[in-house]
Amino acid sequence: MEVASEAVVFDDTKHCSLLPAIAAVHMACITTDGTIATFLPPLSQEKITLWWEDHSKDSERKIILHLATEPSTGKFAVAGVVMLVNEGSKNEGGRFRGGVSKLLVSPSYRRRGIAKQLMGKLEKEAREWGLTLLVGTLLELLDTEVGSPAEKVYPRLGWIKVGVIPKFEQSPADGELKDNVFFYKNLLLDV
Image 1 (cartoon, rainbow, N blue to C red):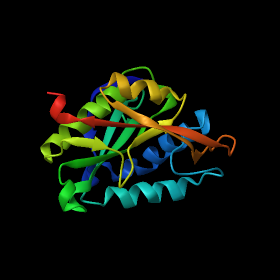
Image 2: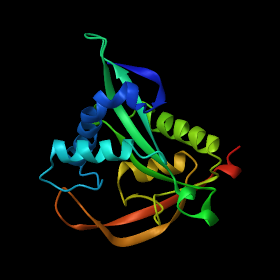
Image 3: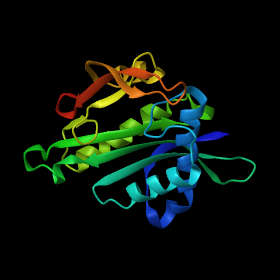
């Protein structure tokens, strides 16, 4: 498959039909390499699609998609997704703060720069909203499992490691509690 050259902001008038594909990427990340991403097996396509549908309707969120074109059909496939949350709408003292959630790249499209493109587009959208500090969502920092591939990706994209919380989340692969590493990025320092 040929990968599209840039990420796009989810538009419900154009992309609602892609919600099951977004859910499929989410599920593939969990089942392929045990990515810790909200849901535990047994996974339900319907439940995860509804989760994305609910989040797509929130005006304080932007879902960023990376679409790939299937040469045989010319149709779009979802190669990756990430979500930006405007945390300032919930916290007047934190109007400058944005949350990042669910950076997920389909196992079929990894190692092609898609995560970098998704995060680049997310940062551009954050700046347009006037956000200057990116963390995780609602009282969390951006996090990933210690030892996961994402732990190496975020620092390469300019994210700063804050620390590790032991036994923070349950692994969908084996049910064990896993350590998570936390990150933030100050967009004022990234000009």
